[in-house]
Length: 112
Image 1 (cartoon, rainbow, N blue to C red):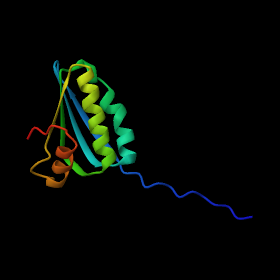
Image 2 (tube, rainbow, N blue to C red):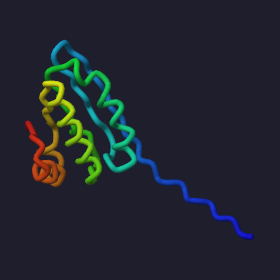
Image 3 (cartoon, rainbow, N blue to C red):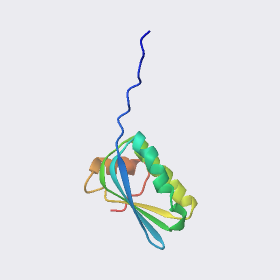
Image 4 (cartoon, one colour):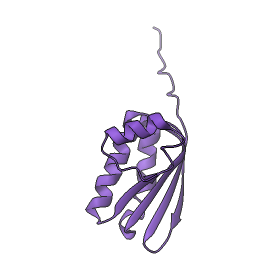
């Protein structure tokens, strides 16, 4: 009998830095936003979401973004609106034109 071991998935790390202010939360995202990291990112985006009126999402340190990452960002935008907050995405246009185009086509509002 032969045994088969499922290969380990390549896991890309994502890091989020959070700055909380009375009416604004700033989230700086570092790394690659793909299917695996997007799932890991959701809890950190969820924390403190309804406390701020504005969520500033800085993607200037994103290396790449896949469709699942865009879906996570649209999920965050919907959740923010449900709490009466506004999601503003910055740091994309100048550094990553292809990412900006992808986010624009998804209906997300880019602020830079």
